Length: 240
Image 1 (cartoon, one colour):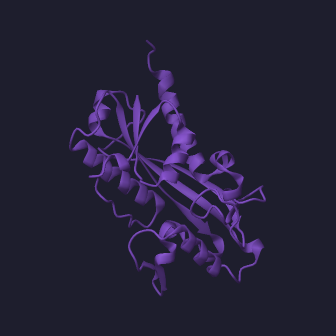
Image 2 (cartoon, one colour):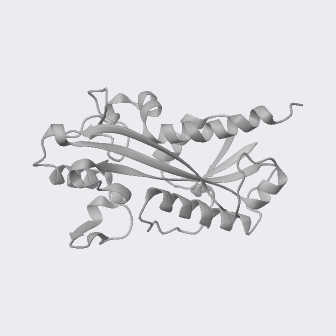
Image 3 (cartoon, helix red, strand yellow):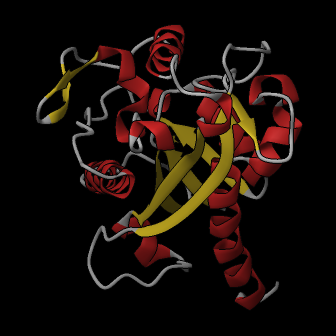
């Protein structure tokens, strides 16, 4: 049994990951570990934030017996966001707290702690694009996932990843190209889903539903790469 600690308390994100990966994984989240340390996501890139979250949580797990039973234990951390071409790639790594940012001569600086409500982020994005014609509202969702094996679990069972250093991460990325529409539509999804229309479609992610989104999304593409790593190892393991 392979156990993945999904390094988030975001129920929407957890649901997507579980739906896409499915069996034979055992899933845990930060809700299962109330004492887990808060990791400050202050890196300049998606990969940097994902690696920081995964590495720090793996170190914390390795410092004590916090997961019982025979299992291969990994921490899976995701950092993702929306990159809008007309905004020079913003909100980017600041996507979740876009509405809590101030524009300064030096770039984006955090003016409040924590994430902003989705509605506030969407409203700010629309204000930022109010003078941009629809044909120039191109952008993409980008996701980078970092997978870190917890050392104690790695020694006890086969690992699909060979690490040169303790707590080193393997990365899996994915993008989904699309455009930003002029008003939100749909009741599903989360984040910027009501504004984002993927290439080849006329409806937003919030309208298309989970089944379609989980085939097209940036997160789905990153998870597909991760899943092949475990599937490859599974074919190499001896059968009982």
